[in-house]
Image 1: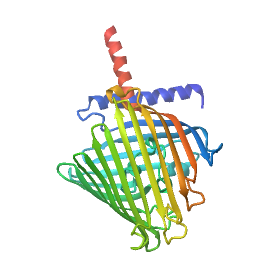
Image 2 (image 1 turned 90 degrees about the vertical axis):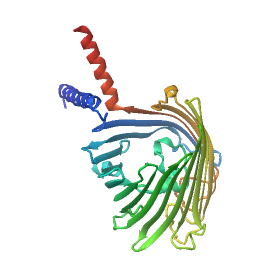
Image 3 (image 1 turned 90 degrees about the horizontal axis):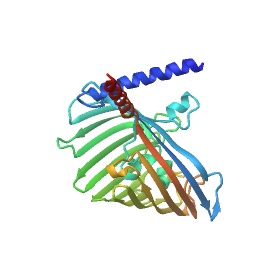
Image 4 (image 1 turned 180 degrees about the vertical axis):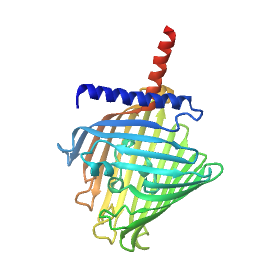
Length: 363
């Protein structure tokens, strides 16, 4: 493609986005039709095993590059799309790296019906948080498949502080497209300092055979302090639900002067499951990970989170029943990095306003 044609296409794209941005700013509802943003994260990693540096797993890494688009279509429909852009070489990769892409029908303020590729509705705060905002996690989190095709219906109370969802989707264990399904009941409730993300999940791992989850995700906020504690119990039968296959994840964080966030987190994964190959956490696993870190927001004096610097360290110990698992015994993990986010439409809108203001001043 010639440089001239490339320049013309770029100018055309900028003009179209400028028009959208201008119309969005003039809309009584704000930027509702089209919101577009990008986010990226770079890390320097230093990983060790038994005190020896793992060269392949260390060095400067381009961890995340995501695009997100949201908006409304009329008064009753809204959509959301998040796409990872770091590993796309063909059409199949593009689909696999689509985290979610769904349409939601909202006939009333109480009811919503959504369909498409969605987040599998599993409770817990570690699971709920965006991967770009987490530095080290449990063995379960590192293996779970959390995006799938399906549909859901949600009821929200009049006050808006409680919502209950039921979702039917492709099972997260269905890696061969064998029509295995999952059925998830999910409650999100916010009451004072406490917010719950609880779920009851039934996921097929073989035809007619289900792995059951009971997940209690709990968050407490006291001023600038936040405490998160997730309790996840799993089992392919009733006996396993008696604490033979479970994970516990927790974090304590404190925000200082709206710019510095310090945190400590820990996870514990255990499995004595009768399923020989394991279901995200393998039998024989008795694994602990502990660590902490600091985040600095240079623009945080105004509550801005668009730029973030971080440093975090974690140490893992115990037994991982999965030979290819993420966390190993006597494993050290250090990450130092930078995250940035940009709202494309708002940025273009500001540029348009400046250009128009400069033009008007010359008239």
